[in-house]
Amino acid sequence: MPTVASAQAISDEAKQHFKAGVAFLDDPDGARVEEAYREFKQAYEMSKSPKVLGNLGICAMKLERDGEAIEALASYLQGVDDITESERNQVTKDLATLRTSVVKLSLSFVGAAQGEALTVVDVRVAIRGDKVTNTYTANGAFELNARPGHHLITVKAPGVKEIQWEVDAPAGGKDAHVFHFEASVNHLDEPPPRTKPEPPRKPSSPSVAPWILMGGGGALGIAGAITGGFAISKTNSIAGHCPNNVCPSSFPLDATRSTARRFVTATDVLLISGTAMAAGGFVWWLVTRNKTEQTAPPATVGCAPEGCMATVNVKF
Picture 1 (cartoon, rainbow, N blue to C red):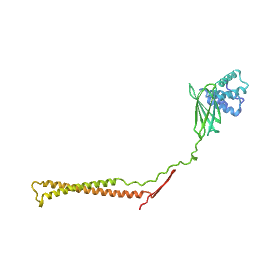
Picture 2: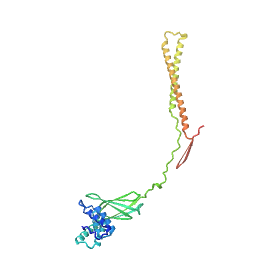
Picture 3: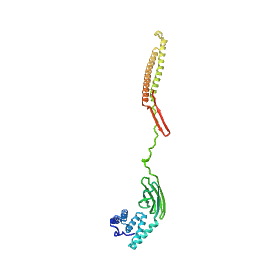
Picture 4: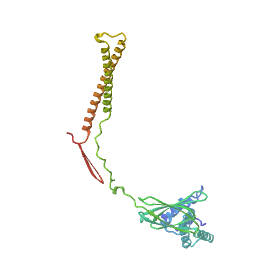
């Protein structure tokens, strides 16, 4: 594995980033590879010194960004002359291993996301250890040089739903996938939803309760008429058997008079109650009918896709 490159050929502007990267790799608690990778990448973008690429390639390889590692280590061997023989052999060996095992995944994008800056998130599900996640930015078609294994690739684009692709990538293999994005929806441009208008309201029918009350009153009146008939029959029986108020000893005058009185009392109660119930039901019906006529709209109009209809309520 290559040693930490010297910072002598790096511009003054990039030296601090380079030194920070070296410090992250030499952290006593363990190499902080991801932080070192960012610092070396920044140092190279500022200085373009090939000597930074050895350190950058090491970090990229450890982070499983194998495509970047291959590019950085190849440029390091080609651009730096003062490399020890042992270091050159190690870098050459690492580079050969990466090139043999790397998986080339070609990604292309169709639909609303075409031409947009896309975010590609690659998660390799390791058999042992934690998942390895790397994030890339793609503009148009993108080739991902990944480590062999099971990958879950998620592509995110502004304004559209993200899409995922799962693939088992063998060493040295190749695969391709087209991500089809649906057009984004701008709710401000949508026409308002068409709603079917409510049909004209019909005036509510009067309650049936007044009719029940009037019917009950009528039934009591009929019962009173029947008991009244029995009372008259008993009175006529007394008059027939007792002319001039003289009754034969065989005629039960007291019992007949008692029965007649009971029928008269029952008739009075039934007739009075029935009349009161019928009158109350009639008044209730009048009040309900007048209220319904007052609340009914004089005219209602409703339109639906199949046509329009109107209802006019006229009171004479």
